[in-house]
Image 1 (cartoon, one colour):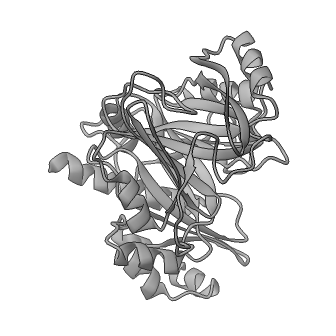
Image 2: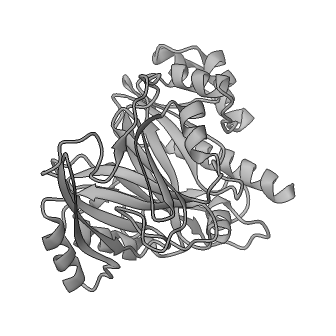
Length: 371
């Protein structure tokens, strides 16, 4: 591996001025302002909930936004993942030697609270760039060049980023898996026993051709980097785009489709999100009527009717459970969305939930296409 990632520092979004993304993250999902920078035509606002940090880059300037890259992208999207590395300069040189493009060579930024060095590399995943950051010499709340923003404590709905999901073109997952392995030290994480890394986990559509292929990658041992999921469509003859194909079309190519945010209490979090005006996807009606589902929910110490009312999915057994819910897209283009996830001893993603989540997003995508 050329540049082993030690932890995820933040996820950056590119949005035109006036888009209510920063406001929605605060009002609907409990994120609180952390630090801000306004210079060179950019307004960069960092927001935090627990250890999850989002950086919203608004506007467009003659220079690149600090710690990132202007994607010159036609639609708003999550465009950058910032990883902490031991030595940003050495990491950039090693990746360049592997053939990676380094549009922002190593640069140091300093203010009264210390210094940080970063470089930006292009990834093979569409408009997604990666920032390699060394901030061991900085003691401020966020990064050099940003002014701290006082804020009240948030509701605590989100504690950290659990996973990141990239929407990929068909048959591209093996190539992406090798790139993340060689460049950042990620390894294949089986989602099912005996899974072939080249094939991943295949989730067939409930009716008709097509479906979803998921490949999970875990970061180097000892790092604090979320699991990375590669999602691609299974080839099939159908007249309607599935959710991954729709993302690729609306986003203009591959990219970060959604972020899984860990919540210590998914029932409290979903109630808070909905109460604030957030919109969650509705699971298929048949999900809660599956044989054994009510017993499974009760075994987790939860009320089946409450889960159904709030659209929360549950999978697992032997005292280990996984609870998940998807939001609707944060953008009018119906691309990027969030997931709330709670783990009660479960470490995987639950094949039953994967199928139900796929179906719920699929039904929402169909409604959007028909609108």
